[in-house]
Image (cartoon, rainbow, N blue to C red; front, side, top):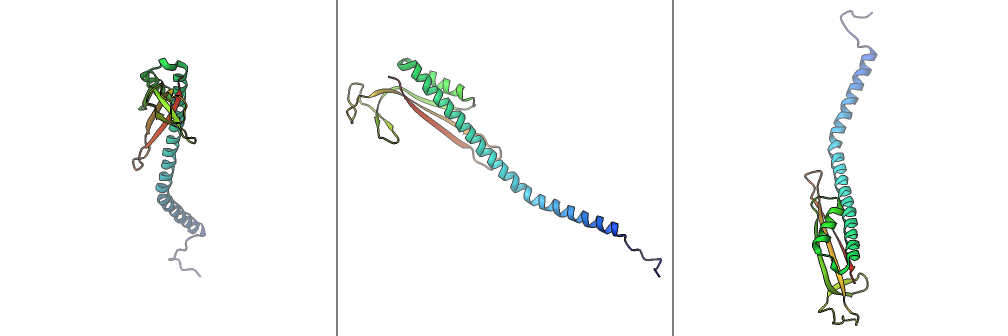
Length: 162
């Protein structure tokens, strides 16, 4: 016979207590993993934005090279810089243009430009120098999380004007 003063918890109450304990464990596990997950997502977002910025900057430099090619020897450095900055769609782009200048092409892979003595003096390989425009654009990608450094993206292009 049961003692009237004792109380036995129904099985239903014991199951509810177990579910509450499991919820607490899940919340604790989430609290431990969430900062690492957010850090990972922030790093991926930072890198993704920097890569997108590199693509936009590359496109702008390419358009600037094409613009200078179309304008030819009458193109000004300021016009190309302005064109590259507006074509990028990014704020804070720094464009540096050396145009027009006489250069000799040296090397095979990758080719590089070497300053020529004059337009009438042959290059070391016997070819005549060409009039080139060199474009360099730089952009510092913003960070989404303060613990990451800003990524600096640089793109360059050289185009022969004549």
